[in-house]
Image (cartoon, rainbow, N blue to C red; front, side, top):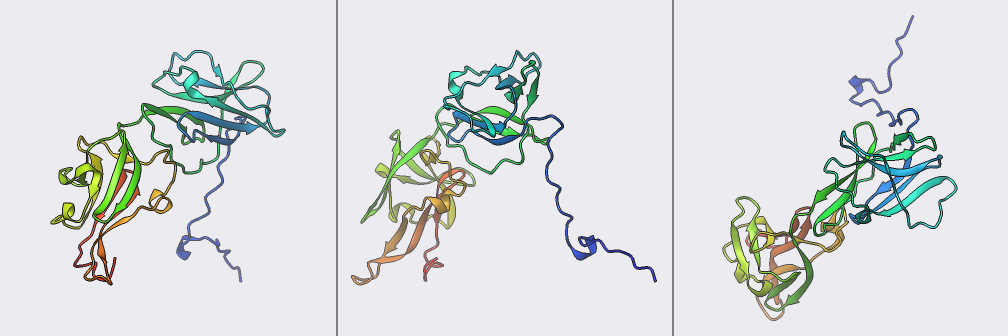
Length: 272
């Protein structure tokens, strides 16, 4: 009797076939590291190959590749690497720049990379740089505008509530995530139980009075909500022995900046 060989990942088993590992195009230099962690300095390393690391304008009328200077003292034996302050290169193309390796003969080859690790670029004033990987695994540099914002400088826990200080100084409000209307004003940056009296349960944004988000300084955490905890706001307790009641509001970091999860004190009776 002839038996049919079964595919161990056949669809009837509810399993997806394994995803093949990405493969570099023939002859493409392979990056072993690429990133702009602070929005300004490019770190790039490729498997050792002859040539000069450079950037090339992606526009159709691109000029010759621009070599990347480096402040690294020397390369590791198995890598060719640079660390470059991009703000010193006067890069102005709106199309972005391909990362390339220019061979001794002058031919420029785009640099390939396996999938890049997920990361966040700190928000800074003006513009910031990021490394992008396209569908073919080839790398390029792009500059994006950073929206106007303020940075949280300090949070002070007081008897009357939480005082938020931002830089540069600005008036603060709680703003509805849906509809964008103001829910409460934070006089002198003070967030109190009275300020949110009557505000229904929801996740609100903490912004300046003119709508600028409040961000973390040098924020590069993928999960700032867990990595940078903030104090909560509580209702007054019922007695001297229990001076603190249930939570009324939780300050949290998200990818939109500082938010405030307003809680329903009736539903939070046992602590949410």
